[in-house]
Length: 198
Image 1 (cartoon, one colour):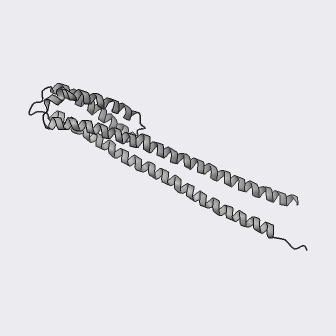
Image 2 (tube, rainbow, N blue to C red; image 1 turned 180 degrees about the vertical axis):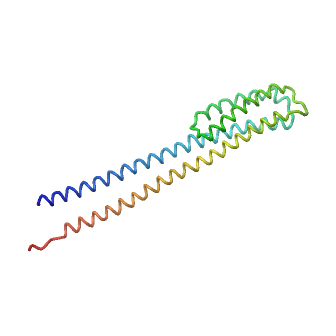
Image 3 (cartoon, rainbow, N blue to C red; image 1 turned 90 degrees about the vertical axis):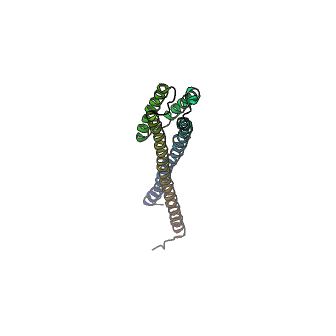
């Protein structure tokens, strides 16, 4: 085998090696993106949605008590509900927040504090004059609804990100298969090709 043929063979083998290495690195990066998206969807979206749901249920009890003018609720059970909401807020803070989500969440915390103060000031529920308390409660409900919409939007964004990574993996897998078939054909040609001596 001549030096030129050896260089051709070494070049061919190195080319195959670098192509396989490059596609492997790209696939590894895409798998990391998919894993990251799945973790984000669970930890920062599904868990956050559950926390929003739990807070909404507790706030709904306040709404019902206010609508029915249940003074006994605000004297007794309301403090318990406020204590139940606090750990949910702390857990929600532990999730990864987008800029939009952080803004809404900060508004929610402010409105919950305001609501708590208004509930203490209200004392006995008057038959009229609870407009400020009702307004703050509606703001809390709106904040929770807005946070819920953010969860859907961000979950959708993460799904699109993981789908793009999967499409890239599929594309590179097809390219690898085509490349391997071409290499197999070339090897067959090299094996079967027998140049005629001059």
